[in-house]
Image 1 (cartoon, protein in one colour):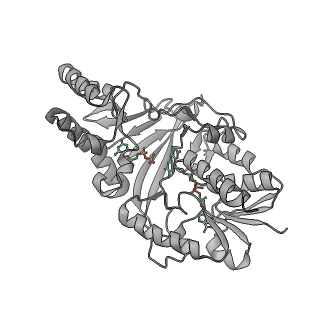
Image 2 (cartoon, rainbow, N blue to C red):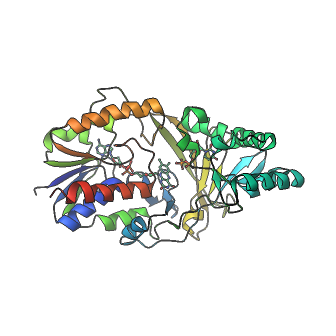
Image 3 (tube, rainbow, N blue to C red):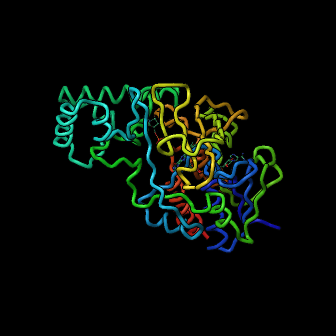
Length: 376
Ligand code: FAD
Ligand code: UDP
């Protein structure tokens, strides 16, 4: 079989592009994937106890893009799951993102009332304020509260997760979890939220079940590249690896996941995700059946602990957004522009961007429409 396109990586980026090329252009695609499954980091599967777990950490789908939501809805039905997260602070479990309910749980009522009034007056009810912005507020009492939140919610978690302090990262990282001047305890407020009814794996299978798409699993492109040539290529792996690290290694953060099944426990924690900013080495515990809504005896929980990344040893889960890393990425991006072959770099690793799933789908659809369909 001759292929029109070679795609490296069977995550969201690779699968969306393969689907579009096969269905909308009727061209043939070969996907090469080094893992033994499709779906990239969004992959899920049933554990030996019949519980659907996300193998690479909790994946909650949320978007304000009608286009992305309806695109994926061609391949899956959705549950109406809305994510709730608690953090253990001063021995109490409070909602994260930190909101007016968290304020009330942690502080005496008179203080909470006064601070609520000040925050609402300064920013407006319903507004989201990044912690690094709140710390610049002029009012002494609000500033003190901001410092408390910084110390108790962000500092310890961030040092564990990234190996650096909050202000050593791009401000956009802390801004993902802003202080919410509201009583809405959900982690996200996006219009569309949920998880695929039959799991992500089933959604990916439906997406690429086209006779024009073939997938080669357990195959590392770096080891077989001399055998596979295509005039058109899409690369979704780490961009520094593609160029043999010629400008140096891009830093990523890796993770260790430890899953444990508890036979005699029907409910381990009050919500699907509990964060531990100030205790232990791990950052968070996920209880999967609270995401999927499975009604089964026993429960499976997963601890996540971050660690440094070494190519060939562990997985580059997170690009680390900060100026010097973005500058190094720009060198690789310029190098990509000089390539004679037609290679498109798409996705969280290839573009060194802290993309969520919906952003990666939007990006892949954009690349298809603007850089693939238009050229042909
Ligand atoms: P990936 O999923 O990383 O796919 C790239 C694929 O390329 C991988 O399968 C990899 O094995 C393969 N590959 C790499 N190099 C090679 C090679 N040389 N040869 C062959 N194959 C190769 N997003 C959300 O929206 N909500 C969430 O709740 C959420 N939670 C997350 C939790 C964690 C712990 C992590 C790490 C990410 C989370 N994300 C979440 C982000 C989400 O995982 C990504 O946005 C999405 O998976 C990116 O898709 P991708 O295809 O760009 O990359
Ligand atoms: N964060 C934190 N405390 C929390 C939750 C998040 O300090 O309780 C910070 C931390 O630096 C984290 C970042 O906010 O890496 C982004 O959080 P998010 O939940 O978006 O991370 P992800 O789900 O992508 O791992």
